[in-house]
Amino acid sequence: LTFREAVGPIGCIIPWNFPILMAAWKLGPALCCGCTVVLKTSEKTPLSALFLAQLIQEAGFPKGVVNVLSGDGPTAGRAIASHMRLTKVAFTGSTITGQKIMTMAVESNMKRVSLELGGKSALIVLGDADLNKATDIAQVGLFLNQGQCCCASSRVFVHASIYDAFLVAAKKAAEARVLGSPFEAKTSQGPQVDKLQFDKVLGYIQDGKGEGARLVTGGAS
Image 1 (tube, rainbow, N blue to C red):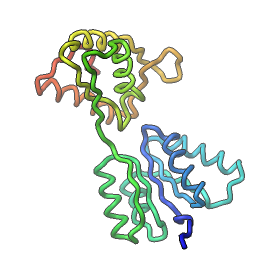
Image 2 (cartoon, rainbow, N blue to C red):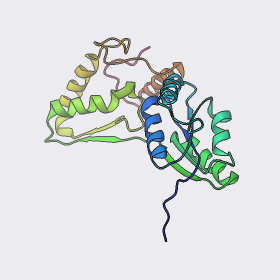
Image 3 (cartoon, helix red, strand yellow):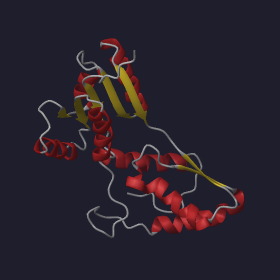
């Protein structure tokens, strides 16, 4: 016989770039399968999940079914990954941290682990592509959520036959983006999550220039 049973209490650790979406992705499947959840938010974006927890309480969820924990990785995250009474940990974030999560899960109680880790996605534009459509797709692929996306197409490979035309179109589209408050309807590019991320982006630009890349627009704080 095969029995379908709830895994048990689950620890979920989510990142800062899509806080409410990540919370929904973690909570939905776990609750549907009859599991209780301890959800740890990023220390950079705790408020949306705390508000969600308030709504869950108002909706009448039994106490202890959904628990939201705010804290940083080395303390709160480590406590979840190594907790002896949690039977599974689900983590979304960097590859380096994912490796640490796996190690702590194994060294504690061999809890199950599911990981969604960061990566880089290349966008390939062929010679017969619709230039306008390709430019629009490249803009979304790179600038979605201020570029703070694990599947951002931060590398674009363009066929030599349309490279110059694509570069002109991409430059024009980038310069047309409106920087400002995300609460303004006209804004198409909001702030990075914090200064650390802001400086990291500028650092990538400087690294590219140092390796011989040509900066055609922007790139200054």
